[in-house]
Amino acid sequence: MEDLFRGFWWLLFPLAAFAFGAWDRWLAYRRSQEQLDLIKTFATQGKEVPPELLKRIQDEEDDDEESDWSGLGRRHRRNRLRRYRHSRGDDIRTVIFTGALAGAFWIASEASLIDGTEGPFRLVALILTCISGATLLSVLVSSRFRDK
Image (cartoon, rainbow, N blue to C red; front, side, top):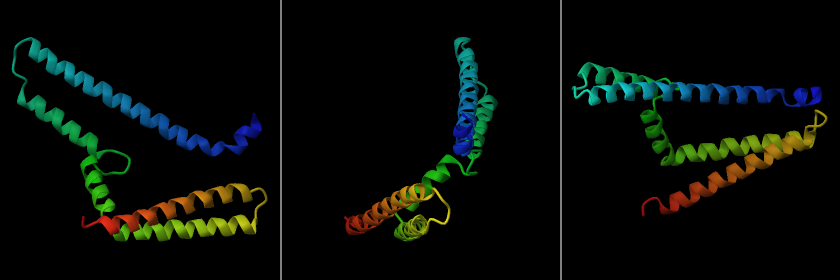
Protein backbone atom coordinates (compact mmCIF):
# COMPACT_ATOMS: atom_id res chain seq x y z
CA MET A 1 0.00 0.00 0.00
CA GLU A 2 2.90 2.36 0.72
CA ASP A 3 4.28 1.82 -2.77
CA LEU A 4 0.91 2.67 -4.25
CA PHE A 5 0.84 5.95 -2.33
CA ARG A 6 4.45 6.77 -3.22
CA GLY A 7 3.78 6.12 -6.90
CA PHE A 8 0.52 8.05 -7.14
CA TRP A 9 0.71 10.75 -4.45
CA TRP A 10 0.05 13.41 -7.07
CA LEU A 11 -3.48 12.06 -7.58
CA LEU A 12 -4.45 13.70 -4.30
CA PHE A 13 -4.54 17.10 -6.04
CA PRO A 14 -7.06 16.28 -8.80
CA LEU A 15 -9.13 14.22 -6.35
CA ALA A 16 -9.25 17.16 -3.95
CA ALA A 17 -10.24 19.47 -6.82
CA PHE A 18 -13.06 17.10 -7.78
CA ALA A 19 -14.21 16.92 -4.17
CA PHE A 20 -14.21 20.70 -3.74
CA GLY A 21 -15.96 21.14 -7.08
CA ALA A 22 -18.65 18.66 -6.10
CA TRP A 23 -19.09 20.40 -2.75
CA ASP A 24 -19.39 23.79 -4.48
CA ARG A 25 -22.00 22.46 -6.92
CA TRP A 26 -23.98 20.87 -4.08
CA LEU A 27 -23.99 24.16 -2.15
CA ALA A 28 -25.10 26.04 -5.27
CA TYR A 29 -27.87 23.49 -5.78
CA ARG A 30 -29.08 23.87 -2.17
CA ARG A 31 -29.02 27.67 -2.50
CA SER A 32 -31.06 27.61 -5.69
CA GLN A 33 -33.56 25.16 -4.11
CA GLU A 34 -34.01 27.47 -1.11
CA GLN A 35 -34.59 30.43 -3.41
CA LEU A 36 -37.11 28.44 -5.44
CA ASP A 37 -38.90 27.38 -2.24
CA LEU A 38 -39.11 31.00 -1.15
CA ILE A 39 -40.63 32.01 -4.48
CA LYS A 40 -43.06 29.07 -4.27
CA THR A 41 -44.13 30.22 -0.81
CA PHE A 42 -45.05 33.62 -2.18
CA ALA A 43 -46.90 32.00 -5.09
CA THR A 44 -48.94 29.64 -2.86
CA GLN A 45 -49.96 32.57 -0.68
CA GLY A 46 -51.10 34.41 -3.78
CA LYS A 47 -48.72 37.28 -3.15
CA GLU A 48 -46.51 39.05 -5.62
CA VAL A 49 -42.81 38.27 -5.21
CA PRO A 50 -41.07 41.45 -4.06
CA PRO A 51 -38.92 42.92 -6.84
CA GLU A 52 -36.10 43.48 -4.30
CA LEU A 53 -36.00 39.73 -3.65
CA LEU A 54 -35.91 38.90 -7.36
CA LYS A 55 -33.16 41.48 -7.90
CA ARG A 56 -31.15 40.03 -5.00
CA ILE A 57 -31.53 36.49 -6.38
CA GLN A 58 -30.46 37.70 -9.84
CA ASP A 59 -27.44 39.52 -8.36
CA GLU A 60 -26.40 36.38 -6.46
CA GLU A 61 -26.71 34.37 -9.66
CA ASP A 62 -24.52 36.86 -11.50
CA ASP A 63 -21.97 36.68 -8.67
CA ASP A 64 -21.99 32.89 -8.91
CA GLU A 65 -21.27 33.08 -12.62
CA GLU A 66 -18.34 35.40 -12.02
CA SER A 67 -16.85 33.51 -9.10
CA ASP A 68 -15.64 30.34 -10.76
CA TRP A 69 -12.02 29.20 -10.50
CA SER A 70 -10.91 30.84 -13.72
CA GLY A 71 -12.15 34.24 -12.57
CA LEU A 72 -14.34 34.57 -15.64
CA GLY A 73 -18.11 34.36 -15.88
CA ARG A 74 -19.81 31.72 -17.99
CA ARG A 75 -20.92 34.23 -20.59
CA HIS A 76 -17.43 35.66 -20.93
CA ARG A 77 -15.87 32.18 -21.19
CA ARG A 78 -18.45 31.20 -23.82
CA ASN A 79 -17.66 34.27 -25.92
CA ARG A 80 -13.93 33.70 -25.52
CA LEU A 81 -14.35 30.06 -26.52
CA ARG A 82 -16.36 31.07 -29.58
CA ARG A 83 -13.64 33.54 -30.63
CA TYR A 84 -10.98 30.93 -29.96
CA ARG A 85 -12.70 28.33 -32.09
CA HIS A 86 -12.91 30.68 -35.01
CA SER A 87 -9.45 32.22 -34.82
CA ARG A 88 -6.92 30.45 -36.96
CA GLY A 89 -3.89 32.06 -35.33
CA ASP A 90 -4.68 30.57 -31.95
CA ASP A 91 -5.07 27.14 -33.50
CA ILE A 92 -1.73 27.42 -35.26
CA ARG A 93 -0.08 28.49 -32.00
CA THR A 94 -1.65 25.45 -30.33
CA VAL A 95 -0.22 23.18 -33.03
CA ILE A 96 3.23 24.70 -32.59
CA PHE A 97 3.10 24.56 -28.79
CA THR A 98 1.84 20.99 -28.51
CA GLY A 99 4.22 19.91 -31.26
CA ALA A 100 7.15 21.43 -29.40
CA LEU A 101 6.06 19.78 -26.16
CA ALA A 102 5.67 16.46 -27.94
CA GLY A 103 9.16 16.83 -29.40
CA ALA A 104 10.60 17.61 -25.97
CA PHE A 105 8.97 14.52 -24.50
CA TRP A 106 10.17 12.36 -27.40
CA ILE A 107 13.72 13.60 -26.80
CA ALA A 108 13.38 13.07 -23.04
CA SER A 109 12.11 9.53 -23.55
CA GLU A 110 14.98 8.68 -25.87
CA ALA A 111 17.65 10.32 -23.70
CA SER A 112 16.25 8.62 -20.56
CA LEU A 113 18.24 10.73 -18.13
CA ILE A 114 16.05 9.49 -15.26
CA ASP A 115 15.64 5.73 -14.94
CA GLY A 116 12.11 4.45 -15.41
CA THR A 117 10.78 7.48 -17.29
CA GLU A 118 11.11 6.13 -20.82
CA GLY A 119 7.64 4.58 -20.91
CA PRO A 120 5.68 7.42 -19.28
CA PHE A 121 7.50 10.07 -21.31
CA ARG A 122 6.87 8.13 -24.50
CA LEU A 123 3.16 7.89 -23.63
CA VAL A 124 2.92 11.64 -22.98
CA ALA A 125 4.81 12.32 -26.21
CA LEU A 126 2.43 10.08 -28.15
CA ILE A 127 -0.63 11.81 -26.67
CA LEU A 128 0.76 15.29 -27.40
CA THR A 129 1.67 14.23 -30.93
CA CYS A 130 -1.91 13.07 -31.49
CA ILE A 131 -3.29 16.33 -30.09
CA SER A 132 -0.95 18.37 -32.26
CA GLY A 133 -1.84 16.35 -35.35
CA ALA A 134 -5.58 16.57 -34.67
CA THR A 135 -5.35 20.33 -34.15
CA LEU A 136 -3.33 20.70 -37.36
CA LEU A 137 -5.94 18.67 -39.22
CA SER A 138 -8.67 20.83 -37.71
CA VAL A 139 -6.86 24.01 -38.83
CA LEU A 140 -6.48 22.69 -42.37
CA VAL A 141 -10.08 21.50 -42.64
CA SER A 142 -11.55 24.64 -41.04
CA SER A 143 -9.52 26.90 -43.31
CA ARG A 144 -10.77 24.95 -46.31
CA PHE A 145 -14.44 25.27 -45.34
CA ARG A 146 -14.34 28.55 -43.41
CA ASP A 147 -16.05 30.68 -46.05
CA LYS A 148 -18.68 28.12 -46.98
